Image 1 (cartoon, one colour):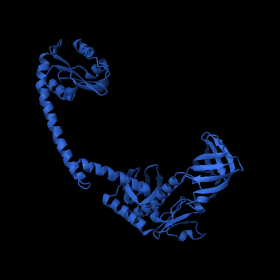
Image 2: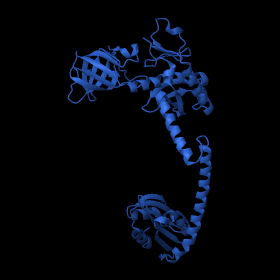
Image 3: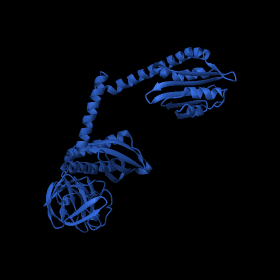
Image 4: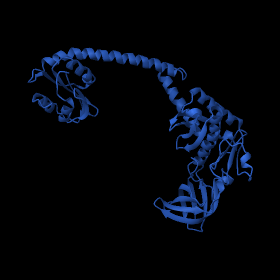
Length: 406
């Protein structure tokens, strides 16, 4: 069994130990130590990383696991020119402190946030997941609800940050036998023996085997990003500490740039942007109307030069240039509004040659089949199909229509 130094002092960054076991599997080489400050993955908190140095040089610790016998295994990769330590050799370990402190900010902040969710919304928290960028908890709400009003989420976030300002002590310990049952735990422990309890100030207490900060204020800041339904529960995404500070830096930087582009302050930017979007919507509708009128003006000229079909209909085969490509759909609609028309239109696009094949409702050709014959990727309806080809063979499609093979 490995002595867990991180329980004795979560702020321990370096330590001395010795190798008690060594094994290898498909993932690599693993070292068991007599004592370690490396936290293994557990309870939603990721493992620590860092280095181990021994007589043969330094190696990188990339993963840490706890087995059923209480042995903590460290997956180790030797540095160039170094070798992994052997069983019985002394080693010095050093924790990747930036990673550990980040995890402790997320974990301690989660305790406080979970307590506020419980107090203000009656939510039961099922677990914690600390991702590389965002953390989350799953919450069962009363009555099977899976959402909370935005105002309630704001209240929860505000209370959580007030708790940080109160700066309550964070105390982790294993209670004496018989004491556990009398403690005001937020939820029942998931283990029966050696239950480790974490308390924050005088308002939060829960069983937990992770690493934590010394006081609530060290969390720094808590920010709820979103809350959404997930498998019958509510999943809350949040940031704590430096993650939250960097998020606010990025948001402020982006909003300031948007405000400058809109010639507005940060607070006025959303209103100014909404007005601009409304103007753009009107402009798009006006442009679409103009394109429709232009297409209607062009359609008669194309039908006059169209090729005759055996049954008396007309075949319009036309390639638009780059400036006209936005007219393709409007032009097809204007053409097939007349009876007896098969319209085979192409235009240059960023992906190759854009194709739009359409026919009047009184005709029976399948435009999807014609797309295939033109070498295009795409699909649609029998009377209207779109696609893209590296070099659309408009002549092959036209020949198929003329021969009655469409």
